[in-house]
Amino acid sequence: MMAIHKILRRSLSAEKRSNEIPKGHLAVYVGESEKKRFVIPLSYLNHPLFQELLCQAEEEFGFNHPMGGLTIPCTEELFIDVTSHLRKA
Image (cartoon, rainbow, N blue to C red; front, side, top):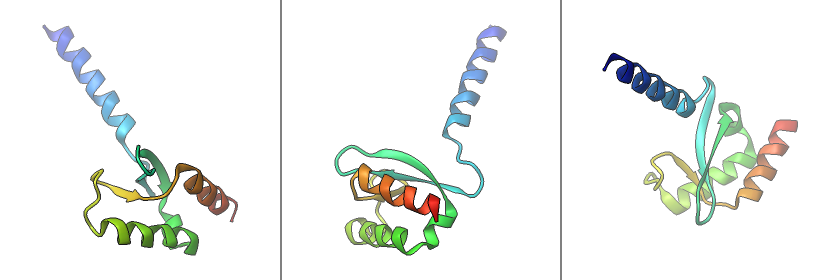
């Protein structure tokens, strides 16, 4: 019985770790129909390109985001293009 508790505790803590977001980062959900989770640096929030995406999210969802986190209504490809540009800046 103790072994089962240890295994359960280990698997639950591993699951929790995989869902954790590093300090200074934010999880966002991106996609038009199926949403994919991305973890981005908080510094992106101040960049004008990313702020355009945030405006789109505000127009579409207001403060009611369907995934429970920040949802950005654009294609995954566009999001990757924007974030790769921000990474180089």
